[in-house]
Image 1: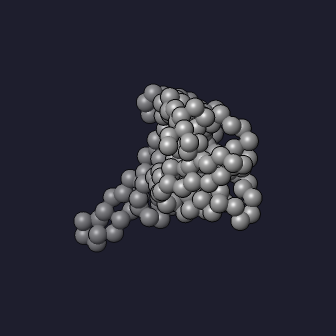
Image 2: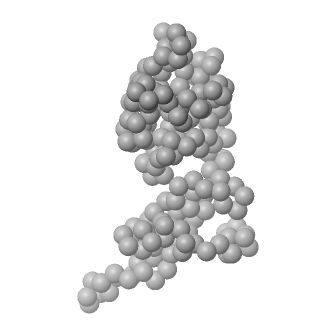
Image 3: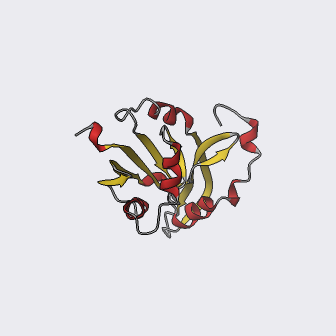
Length: 168
């Protein structure tokens, strides 16, 4: 383990569902972002698989784990400027906001719990389906936009938001 951190050895990694998924599929699996060792991180579970030369049977002999702190990546995103009032959102597959530099706090609530049948609710559902696209909607009399794309490796979506008139 490099750099060595004693706290990482105390964690019970077999309790994460990704451990089982990696063991069953014999393929690497990423955790959702989680609070780990007092930082927001992603854990990569990668099985070490040996294949028998005679039978071809595959057997897991170990698991390599990488704890990837998210903060350095998110710090880079803080520099994104979308017009005068826009920003970005990173959401998980449950529409929880993982990170944002958005300046309109009411917007968080509107995205998390959009009014039933609203265009924001429809757009949010498309985002949660892991699709990419561009959509406009109104908040009051102002036309806003979302430009969105999935980050499939971690089941996130990256969303840019702004007021349309600032660009049109």
